[in-house]
Image (cartoon, rainbow, N blue to C red):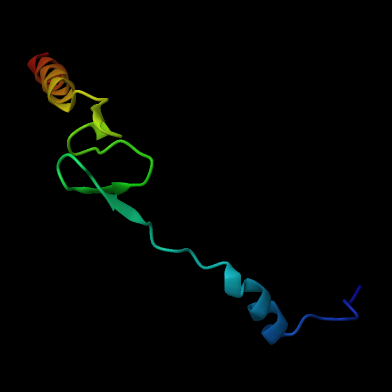
Length: 73
């Protein structure tokens, strides 16, 4: 069956004009000055809203320990 009232290219494209993605809006970390997403932990220093939330140094050390144990097998 054929669509009787076919949407033209211009109507289709006008409808899709709002589908474009915007670039992420980034905030500046109060602690280290790195760019991060709003309302998210800074993955550079582990701080959020003026307090330390993640201990990234300990996390990196445990990751390195696991990697070295994996290669030692």
